[in-house]
Length: 118
Length: 118
Image (cartoon, rainbow over all chains, first blue to last red; front, side, top):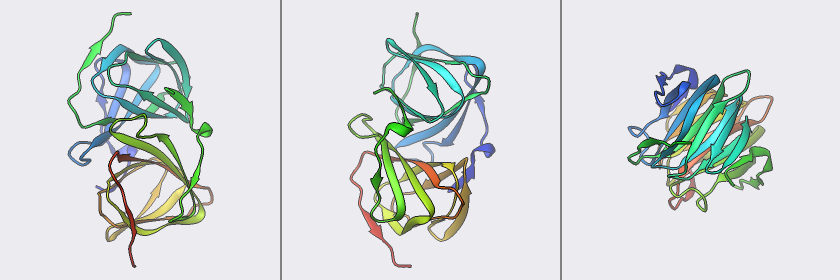
């Protein structure tokens, strides 16, 4: 596959979140260095404070959310660029009337997710 | 910077193209493994057939274009996911009434661009 509509990719539920689904748009089987995923969080959904072993490079496509990164809370919306360093606690709360949608690229490296107590 | 609007990033002209500008949204100074850029091609603009030393993972944000990848020509539009392997000849022709805009992620590795004769 060289060109494919985002609507044609399967979704997986994100069990660590609520009302949150993800698609692997370009996976390690295709991209040798990093993966491109899309996340969709329904209004009221999100993910609790957690860490990952890998950094996140993100671009917000639609909607809005409250995103905590480390000790700082941000109100993000479509067109925002978000960088989350590896190991930094972060959370998402989808706050808009429409789904919060964003792209999230991560390196092809082992990842673990750890939920952080607030 | 953890969160920043795409409207706040500077543009650079892409000299190998016509009517084409780019922004580095997350560069090698911030992301340790790969960079996230945005390209904007005005209607009628684009880039001639060329190769890069690194792969491209792309997501189309707006507009439409004729994109050649290897020997195959695609009509792409917003919401399309595009993968261009390293070393594969590719070109862009912005064909819509509005600018053709896409994200393009590349690994942090030396790149060279070589224009290919048609």
